[in-house]
Length: 246
Image (cartoon, rainbow, N blue to C red; front, top):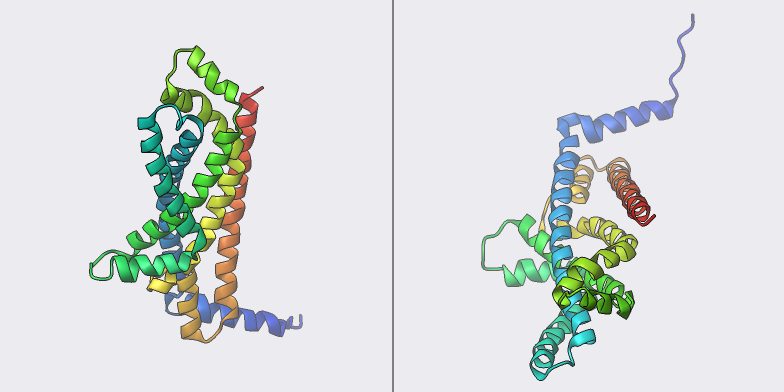
């Protein structure tokens, strides 16, 4: 039988794949970078959730009950002012600039793990957007729900925790899911502080092989797979929450 000729593009693809990923174990740059990206995203999401909910509750409380007594009004006004400054600054400046300020200015004279800096920067940035998403969800809850809580003997905090927050979570889950997907992709700028994340790993391979196509396409595909997985997880959570209402 005559030998089957291998198409030239397959030979070139094989050679490029070997050069970019197999030779000198360059695939490890992507694996190690993916680990860094996932760690940054996970802990930044936790910070964003905690900070976002705290800010949202303060602002929503100021709008709903901040005018009851002078003491409460004064305290909430100060807290609300601080929250507004935080939201204005964080949402009004690029995340990469915030990352650079935190690393080179705030921690410029301190030896600190770059991953911790990235987690703080992206967590603080995400918290501002989570806060507005959650505040919108809280404010969309009918005032009658608060009155129902009072009729059950709950104070304001108990009403928020047991009645308002669960309903808010169900309403804002799609928006929160989108925010966390955006956060995952935003971590790609962590390389600005010389952090070897997934994107930086692909760029290191490119700098060694002088081949941009394959390593950068690989990085894009990895991000795409992660986003698809997060989107499906989000839809699964939405279906489960809807099923509980039936």
